[in-house]
Image (tube, rainbow, N blue to C red; front, side, top):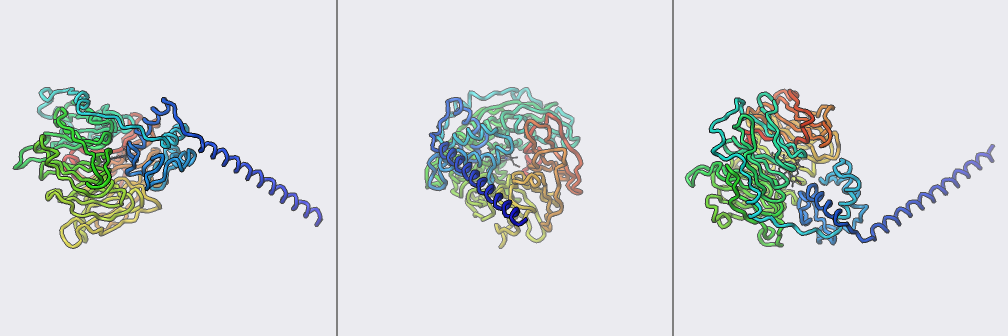
Length: 562
Ligand code: DHE
């Protein structure tokens, strides 16, 4: 018996040794194959190059820059830039793995999400090992050629033709459909859906609220008249190849009445801003934003315009130039001297999104590469301070909340860690101090937007970029007095997307949240919650509701209520 057992034992040992050897051999062969693949020179056919350029522009350039010198994401240069490793050093398979699975710092899992197919992932892995192609030109002549005045001012209504409460309309970005849906906030009915262009990014309103301006990733700005019986696009123009921001002039005072006279569109590619007539979109002025990093360092041709806000107290737009870290206070009272009259303030890199504090005197913007919030005293045209916050702050416009202990606070969340930071803004010893960091439940970051309203006691936060599906589909509601979590809301099972971006109605008693599903599935929705009870009171869905993301209430947007 003992002998049989010994034989069995010996046979198992021999079998294991053989299997290990063959596993090792397989590993060796795989490694050899990878080495061979990596040592091959990376080449693309003309057709592949064109396809890769398009994919890069649509999915990667926002974070890594069109010239691939890096911004929110690292540089992607074949030979590195001294700070970040060369793309070639990762090899094609290494890059395929990153593009497929994403990285914890905020790099999306393009492959896993199914946004890029395995072939497209491999194509992009090769593309970024080749030198970046040159950025094409787009001049004022081209902007002018793109201008279409569809309905002249004289042919537009002189009073609202709709019987609906248009001041409580919501404009909802249907990102991948290239459309904007307009809803009646009172009845929750769909008023209309308009074709605005490729991957619309945000909406802003005229200061009267009568018009919506949409801006798309194709640089196209669209003017939508809400006074018509059914809202219509009345003008459009293309400011650049790529853009993210649009804002109107809001000042009326001793220096003149500029309310709804001009709009500004911030170009990503090429890097410039364009001023248009606000009522017709006739192009008036183009100003390039290239320059030196922080006004004195390395020259950057790609110096993209990120967020823009309009002052109500001066004829000024606050224009944030991402790569150079410069905040421009653009004085639009004399368009002939617009650049000459612009105060250019060096701050920090890379400027992204931001909004006003409660007083409307200070503008706070994220410098996301250095984990800071920059505060600009717009009235006195100077840098007020720079505040350390968490990893990759992403405020959207941020939100203003109030409690007895800290007075007014401006709030930002973070992509890189699960932390919501409250900064005191009232004059006094605590001004600009981080008075509270709220730790979000669960691991990782991924917060994109926060929102509150002067009539509410709640602070809302999403988790859209978290790597865990469960957290992507959670919405967190905190008490503004105690800053404690009140409830974690879950997207109903029936809808499959991530919860993203919150917007209040005009009364400030309900909150609209997007459930951002895949573009070829009918699983998206807009969820409407009662802000007091936190109950889901209404859902908007349908096969036409493709990838809803940002939502903008007319009244709140016009009055900068956030
Ligand atoms: Fe945005 C605002 C840039 C990805 C939804 N986004 C902004 C602003 C900038 C910007 C500069 C500020 C505009 C302003 O206030 O004037 N966004 C970028 C990018 O570069 C980035 C990272 C990558 C890209 O290629 O575009 C990017 N953004 C996204 C998304 O993937 C989001 C979540 C979905 C979508 O629709 O594309 C998204 N961004 C938004 C929204 C706002 C925004 C909803 C407005 C927030 C607000 O309440 O004002």
